[in-house]
Image 1 (cartoon, rainbow, N blue to C red):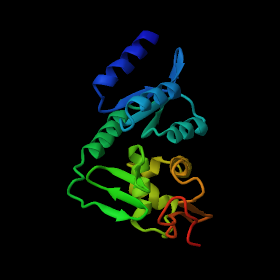
Image 2 (cartoon, helix red, strand yellow):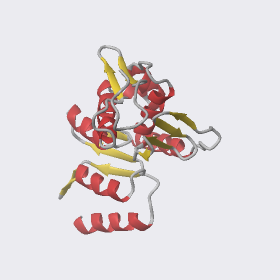
Image 3 (cartoon, helix red, strand yellow):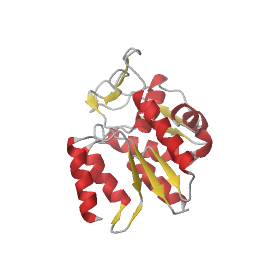
Length: 209
């Protein structure tokens, strides 16, 4: 199994896969550790976790790491195929028809599917990109968790409120690396999340409030 895992990771360096289905409970390793190594090779390859565990924490950990989806065992093969197709359809959607928009200091380039924070590109999985893109579309506006689930996730009815929380936590960590003293994503207790509309023009400056 170890040699198969290493061979697969080696092949991915030269032949990026369209999508990876990764079992959390590998015989001689953690699926989470393999995922981290995969992300170091390709930051944008969609990943679906398979897990036999019923604990919510396992799903939250996977989503915090940046996985695109998870399927709990036992599952229907048709369900897995449907989720794979849904993710691949999204990845294949042409985005170049949408003009790039800039929301300083957050800039969203739809054509390249890229978001920059103070000019520096953020490495984002598909859901994190969709989440930050939605928040950046209306700075200061509070989006509820339900609204974010409906706009960003393929099947909002199958997702959890903590799914949004986990992705926001990771987004904040990435943005803190660029501007440690700022709080770009604000929590509104009982309501949801908003992208701050009072961010300074420069990352080293204090916020405008």
